[in-house]
Length: 305
Image (tube, rainbow, N blue to C red; front, top):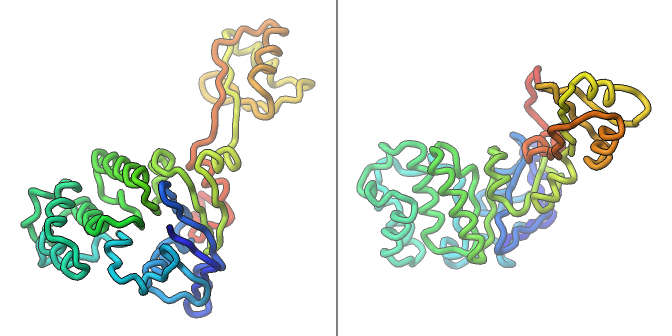
């Protein structure tokens, strides 16, 4: 379990992480989301003892990372796929990590096979693509068979097969009872992978909720309607007196907010409008995230503004 308690970090008087508190529980994939500059990577570095907090604590099973006697056996992390010695082979990179934490050497071959790099074990890392480096970073995180995992943007550089593999791997690791914290800007993947979301903006906690609850709370629900006679539907929905918030969209369809599909269907039937499509549409995680973090974006393009 990871516990973040009142965590604060300042650089040159600027507060990058601001009184942040949340938990990453075992058996759950927790997605760690936020705009660029929100403080996600800094928070992960604080958990791993790579930065010292200005105040607050980051604990793993009740202990600071620096207090763990064999950290790779308890915590696996991937923060930067480029932070590898280019002159080493993949096998050599993992062998010295294993030796430093008393991990049996047989684990090197096991994790290389697990991430699909068994045939590249003897290659120099400098020849690796970004996707191969990501896989090697995941192998290093899994080396000690840890109960806690922190992965920062693990799908960067991966092809569709690799992205699907990471998704399955993270869910399998959580199903084994591990605590998994994963940061990503790829919202479609987070929607498929994360059970729970922690969202931060400008270093502060914005949301700490189950993924489905987050979408329900911050997304919009609309009813999409199409009729055999588009003109009659337009007259019905566009007219006053029904109290419907209706907007014309593509293909002669309308989107209606603030009403249940049963009410719309009954209204259409009462006015002789024959419907051939009526469907509930829910915002995606990306749409809910964009709406929720609109005021926390640090780097905003003119078009987005």
